Amino acid sequence: MRSLWIVGAVIALMVLAKIFLFPAKEEQKSGPGGPGGGKGKGSTMPVDIYLAKKQENAQEIFASGTMVANEEVELHPEMSGRIVKLNISEGNLVQKGQLIAKIYDADILARLKKNKYEAELAAQVEARQKKLLDINAISKEEYDLALNKVNTLGADRESLEVALAQTEVRAPFSGRIGLKAISVGAYVTPATTIATLVQTNPIRMDFSVPEKYAANINKGSKISFGLDGSAQKFDGTVTAIDPKIDEALRTLKIRATVPNTVERFRPGMFVKVNVKLGSTQSILVPSETLIPFIGGKKIYVMKGGKAVEQNVVTGLRTSDKVEILEGINVGDSIVASGIMALKDGQAVKAKKVLNP
Image (cartoon, rainbow, N blue to C red; front, side, top):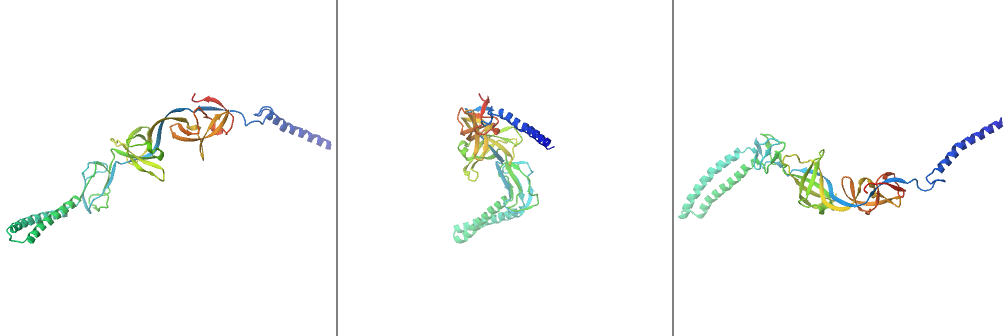
């Protein structure tokens, strides 16, 4: 009985040896290093290659911008009083100098009327006193009192005329009225906003660019831009450049002017701005060949049948390519496929040249 148990155990050991030992030998025979296996880093990986060449590079930068009214002002009265007339409709165009609102002025008109009568009487008195002075019938001091009365009433009239003008609120420029903040009958003060007046033709557009491009943009430079949700492009002209760099963001603020005859653009709109900086001959590579990492960006270059990591410094971007400023030379074979599966020093071979 014991001998049968021993025989069974031997058979079981032979079966286990068959399972574990023979497949391992087969795997060793077919390994990447050939017979005996285990040599090298693995099989050669076929990859697409992009040849580094100098090519025409239309340099351009992209920025986010905001539409700004060409002119914008909150309309306030210059004096306190009750509104007796409101000569505007929300959203309507008004012309420069057009009456916007009128404040109650009957009391000022009454004082002007009184001043007129007093001034006429004072003028008559002054004329008589002048004749008497000419024949030495009165002293010079008596005549000066009459003349002073005339001058004082004249100054009073000028003051009343200024006050009368301040009862009117007029448009300082042509533009479109926004939403009204008051109604007829309201009592207003100089702190009260009547409405907002904006001028949007032409309209301005503000955007910022990195400071390294400051020397490439000048007054008169042409820009193009698009609106969110639209493929249509529009043109504008740079009309002002901030004289100083933003220290926190290291950017330069630019202002462009855009025709807006049909009032398609409104203040506050978000725009995507494109500024062309000219063209140069430079190395451009497909954007998908770049691998970002904490210290910068790298590219795999095929050298001697191996993929070699190469740190690079990038410049401007186009829609599908990136300018390489440092790290790549003309003629280098850049790996353009399977880069996420590559390791530095891995064996590779060219499957296809994308730009022969």
